Image 1 (spheres, rainbow, N blue to C red):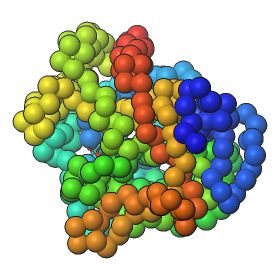
Image 2: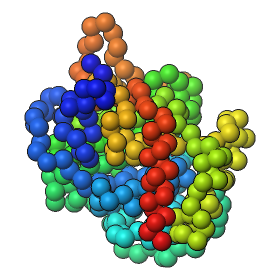
Image 3: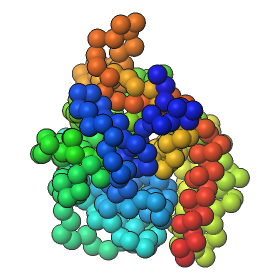
Length: 345
Ligand code: BDR
Ligand code: CA
């Protein structure tokens, strides 16, 4: 049954703001108070940066950590960009920053054609030297272990870190509050005809995560593509006199230009920001329980989200997938989130 605003007592991102439902076979029933602590796992990326901007100033969540992962940009660049974003925005509470695993395996793709060679619109931001950062997988493990069932993870890049944390400490899968992931596509990918970028970038990690007994929700391309920031939204950004306005006015125009060149779109997709909004406002999304896996070896289909939608499914349901979104309301939340970040100074 779809989970809609009409039956949302049965809903969904329990981790953040509603009752929590766990995927079979783990049945924890109602999990008591909804957790508010969030880890953001990101590969910034201009749309990750916008999601972070909103999250870091939202009083309803506590961003306990931002963990960097290679994806849209290489891992070294991802962690540097996380630090750049925090330093430029200077939020009231600075989260812990987790360093990505540096792998020998080259990334199968990147998004530098959309976000710039540096991932943040080629702005040449100065940033402090990064010393003594803990690995992302350790931070994820520590935070979940310290507050079982209270910490949710919003994954806005490949699932490398989350899979790594579960491999390191399998018990975490039943201790994490909720996993909310931007990824996958029901009807055609973006990086290949079959696959969406985040799942394609580390399909083995995605498969491992999907097989965990955690409560998981996927916000796929089909939903995120329904929301785009327009040039008129760009004009309404806060003034450069604010840290948020100054930062977003530096990075967003680059992505608008590349979206026009690459996609012919008069606007910018907000895949990651939409996913963050799903954590903050689950009532704006319709979810369906599905049985999902990932293709890891296909010649044409590596990274494809495969769903068992047979008349009599043989796989067990393992996650929720968003299938509808209230586009206007999400965009309203985005613009109000940006305004709130700007009010901080
Ligand atoms: C995903 O890939 C990147 O373009 C975005 O940051 C988003 O996380 C969309 O496929
Ligand atoms: Ca991303």
